[in-house]
Length: 451
Ligand SMILES: *Cc1c(COP(=O)(O)O)cnc(C)c1O
Image 1 (cartoon, rainbow, N blue to C red):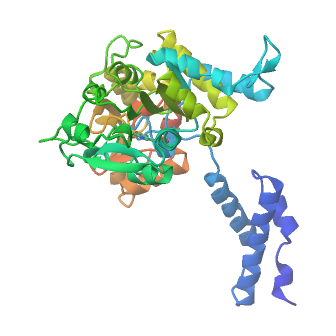
Image 2: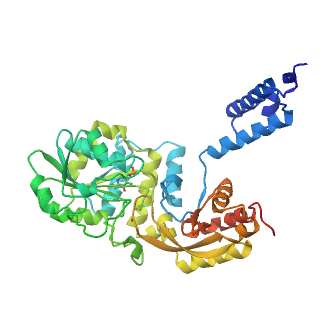
Image 3: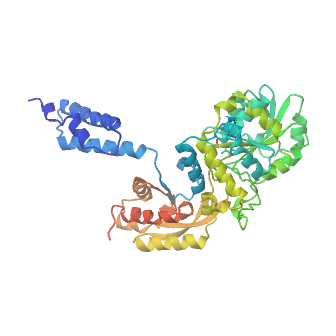
């Protein structure tokens, strides 16, 4: 008899699988049976059980790749790979309400006439940062592209050589400039650029002076960059790509300005110092959904809103709802409730106490002091004092489990940590207290433990 006849049917394998939509489970079952057939054809013995086991393993693999929540115990609060800012309950509720039914997205209820998407979130943002007007787009990379394409296509944009940066994910200022059709004019040197370098480069061909926040690195030593107020008088509009989206550097929504903010520029202050436009992300220090904001002079914002690219970059209704609710928290002086600010300002003693409670429950772990970071391309080089739990003792009970293996095991439980001093560490700065139980369970279930 053909040994292949003894293999379970695809249907039979399929009946043993759960957790995926039928069509995807069917693909998995077919792959597993196909592989077993192939192996039998080569004279390798395969049991029916092994085929089902293989299919289940494949389901696990597919499931783990699906978009799902994780616990961010890296201590990097705005971790781009982990979805940047968590969104506030109020913002989520607003997005849900607008998303589950119809809305007045582009409709004026009063007149029963067509309205504009721009009526949402933009005005609140403008109010919150002291701008004449604000336009919301899909993300800040889109905001920068729109500004350059809309205001400088075929003309010159002056940028300091110290600010020709790559933000990450391949977003490089010279490339975006080329893509927009604007012509880059480099001035100054890598470490020092003065206002007079810009002044010397301004011609009738100059469309904009662009300042780019060096969002993911910091230059120290013999360095100098021209300030916004020095550039504002040179004749061409000054655009600041602030990136991080700190609405106001005096953080009036917190009882005290955190020292780890360093000298981070606020959007409001850039505008006060004479920037014509400021662009920033919605999901960095603003603490909202993914979005890009262009705030500043009403005439320029209007011109950008009418550009064809604006249509291609327009934000979704749920984004606008969540963004507006996020900004309302700032307007209420209540932004301390926004998850980013709440997590970032939890007193260190609280984190130490929580780490102690976790470590007390899981033998072989210990409390460690750590340095967390805002991340997401903001506040480079500045750290937030933090505490966490290190999986040190485990190495002794299971020497084969080095830190990397511990972290891999934890990731299997959807907990993402980091290594520090050769140890696997779960940093509590980026963990909501309600998730501490999950950490305890994940740590307690690590293999190779002896209780
Ligand atoms: C983060 C950042 C960007 C890109 O913003 P996204 O919202 O991720 O598209 C651009 N410029 C600066 C300075 C940034 O910090």
